[in-house]
Image 1 (cartoon, rainbow, N blue to C red):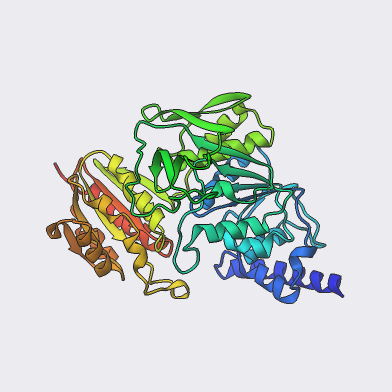
Image 2: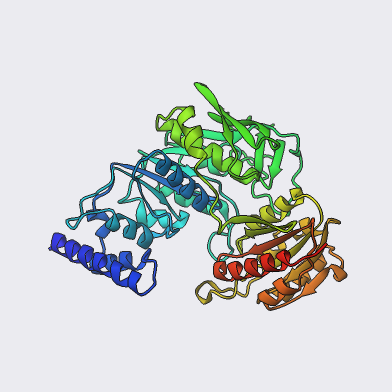
Length: 457
């Protein structure tokens, strides 16, 4: 009876896919939901590829997942993935049934799955990855993942003991998960810009995870990312197995080294966050046995998806649209900090529209006060336009951050904000948007590009 129910669920789900595409849907979640509704233990029955890679963590997992797939594509290897971003049980179920024949047997030998951290308890009992790459663990949305150690405990409880972990050695929360598993660590050697005291509003690990003594940071990069030790018990950050070093922002290269060799890699993006992603991906491919030369070449074909970051230069104006995940204080802080390195004067449009998605709506604004809006209080930022449903909340938070009131322009309508924001040649317009407004962001970008094209002088 179980096999019959599984096949009915498989065939019903497969038949729903062309129907959904005809009606303009992506079919990334719903087929999996159909399969699970008909056969609750569908994941136990569906055939899986022999080699499975799971990418999880608070921030960066979609980017890393898609970069890995870009590299496999460049190598000519056909790999199954949920690269559309459906990273919960129904999304991974959908990917597996798409990658199976009509009898449920796998058509791929390798899969790469972006996996939501809290969904691991519903996925890993049946989908057992050979490698688990963890990007980082940070404080996330207060609605779901507000406590990173809580998320770390979920991962520890659910990651199979047979999985090998690829962990960020500069993140003392990540390195503590699943202590019984085999692991390697990646990180970035000390930089000239590193600090010894945290300048961010949040630092999620200040005390030793072993003895609760005060941690002493050898250096800090941002928030709790860096290297630390405890003077009371001797606990310290682990040594790297894979290290990023010799970062050259002019040539846009980074050297990634391990005990068996090194390679000089072209940056996919010059943010330190994406350099970490590159080192993590290199560690994964090295663990799978690929030589540096082949990884270097494949990584030239990977990129940060345009929904995350896009730069358009039009008639002397740099137009930057960047994802700043609403309700995630750290993700927004990293985005705000990044633009300090954008040359010249700039104007900013804030449109992190976290009230448009009714399913995930929250009136809680506490995350804004964990977020470093203070990074926008800079002389080279000449104007900040606040728009969308949270426009007045953003205005208030900017005032608390010390931004002069005359710099802040309130424009609740995002398109009108794009039409009214100050723009002139030789400057940059930086747009920060949320995950609920990709289509709207494209409209805003189009308006800004058209305006830039008409500038004179």
